[in-house]
Amino acid sequence: MSIRNRYYDDGRRPITVFEKAVISVGNLSTGGTGKTPLIEYLIRLLKDEYSIATISRGYGRKTKGVRIASKNDSSRTLGDEPFQFYRKFGSEIEVVVGEERIMAIPELLIEKPDIQLFLLDDAYQHRKAGRDIDVLLTDFSKPFFQDYVLPTGNLREKRNEAHRANCIIVTKCPSLSRKEKAEWKMKIAEYNKDAPVFFSNISYSDLEPVFNKAECENDIAIIVGIADPEPFYKNLEKGYNIIEKFEFIDHYNFKSSDLDRILRKLNNKRISLVVTEKDMVRLLEFEDHPIFKKYSLFYQPIMFELDEQEKFDQFIIEGVEKRLRELND
Image 1 (cartoon, rainbow, N blue to C red):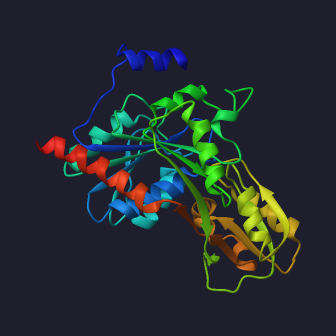
Image 2 (spheres, rainbow, N blue to C red):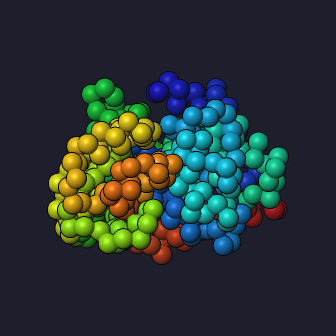
């Protein structure tokens, strides 16, 4: 990775710069930093002013190549996160998946030349595609500056590659004092002294029913397939009694046999089933499974919140406007 990055830095590997504004959201670690909520935040921030497309790899999908989301798609054809974007914003933005972002962008532009802004999901390491703003996320509980490269730790590349970021966000933060924030900024400045640093957390809304309107029972069973479910658990423990946890790997494609096993394990208990929003989109195809006839399914909506929201919004909007002005001049 170090040699690869050096080749990009000194020009021995080419970077394609598109005549559009491009924002990349990513991390140095292997996942679980909150990229999806931030992408949704950026969509809400920018969609009324700009024509937007999200570009994702589509991890876990059963299709190959570049695919532009349509009403015929599902989590199996797009991947869970892109399908989540499409379900929420498909009438307002374009959602595209492709293993190579460098191929997905021009293919979309053939059909949609008026796109002004691309949001690259999980693209910090995808350096073939140039970007105007590189947003780097790091989890408060596992900051990149205390981590190590795989297999010793969870980093995809060395800590010093944080120098490429134009903006760094510490995610999933507890309440921090001004002094604590200053200490974090000093530690991050050892790797990038120029990028503004923001602190964020995830807020949880009330549980939403998936297949039918119902009231959630106090006793719940959780079905989860995300990288870091602990914050999800801790939030639910505040209002519910968790009696079972059925854990799967991140981006897991559920099978009917998985639900059969869970149904047998629950053994007629009086409970409701609760999942994350990302897991929910992978369960939609199983609406007719016996488990969802017997137990009501709920998902937990989340929102991305920033401590200096106006400052962050201004940073993003100014970056986009600057790029679009350059293209028009």
